[in-house]
Structures are given as C-alpha cells and as structure tokens.
Amino acid sequence: MSPMAEVTSPDSEASLIDALTRVLARACRQLGNAGHPSDAAHLAAEGWSLLRHRFPDDAERLNGALHYLSRVEQKLEAIERQSSSKTS
Image (cartoon, rainbow, N blue to C red; front, side, top):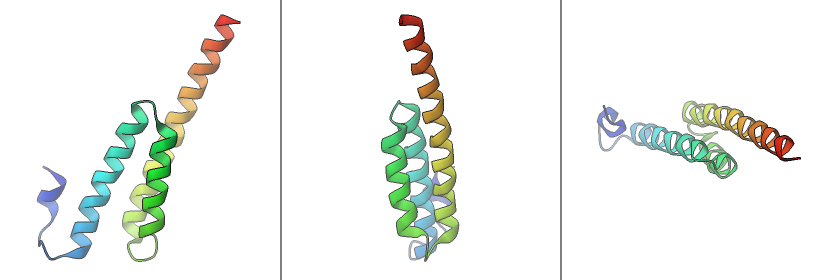
C-alpha cells in the first residue's frame, strides 16, 4: 500500500504530515544506503526539527531514520578503514 493510501481525508493535516514524513524517512534511508548517509542525516534532522513540537510522533519516525543512518555511516567507515589498512 502506498503512503498516500493511508491518508483518510485530503483535508487532514495530520494524515498528510504522517504520509510526507514516511516518504521523507524512506528517501533518507535510500540516500544513506546509496552511500550518502551524512547528507541523508542532515535532511532527516532538518525534518525532525520542523516536526518536533507540533507532530512529535512524526518527528520520532525521523529520529528512527537518524539512528539507522548512524549505523549505515559506521558501517561505511569500517569498510573504508578496512580498505585503507589493506592498501597500507
């Protein structure tokens, strides 16, 4: 089911924010998996900052994406260290 299918009313601000947050979180994870976790984390953090007061549940979704991206970045750094130690 697409995220937009979950929006029950086109006029529902909370439903729209929820759907857009899901899209942003998924896009950030994909960007991170494509080798750009730092860029993705900056986007997720900006979204979190915009949502944290009025839509804390949606902000929490982006917080989860930030934790995921942190692990992706750690894995990439470990791979880079391993590669550089083999070439040294």
